[in-house]
Length: 159
Image 1: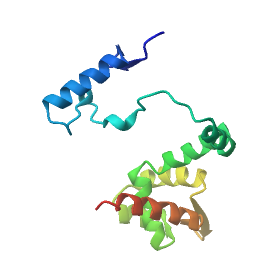
Image 2: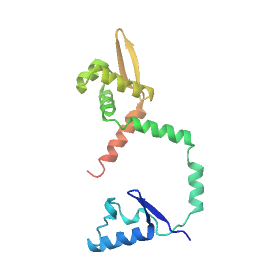
Image 3: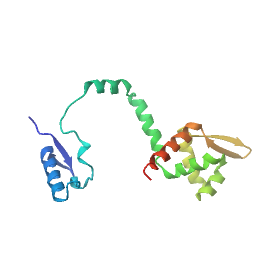
Image 4: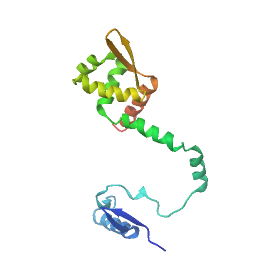
């Protein structure tokens, strides 16, 4: 039977050796201290035995979206990974504004704002309308506000 192994710092380490080292380090540093070779995660991150639960996997497989949908969702959340775009969205929570207003409010150039607006528009998070020589931007719909509100609620849970 082949021993299960882990890759750590480019080295292959047998799992049983890794766990013994982790236990030894925990004993030396107090029972609640798991150093885990600098990874700083707790022992319960992995199961002690390899037991598959087919009934649960069946439910998961039936509910799992297809790869295209998962990819699209991941791409959407990447858009929220930029603090400048989040700042723009927060301004748009309050009012419909033009690029000039956004640049002034965020202390950025109109060019930098325009670049971020393009990404937000491509991902259907904002919409625009022309009024004379100005283009005004607003949130595309209430889903955008809900996503940000849920994110804020999540990060404030333990504060």
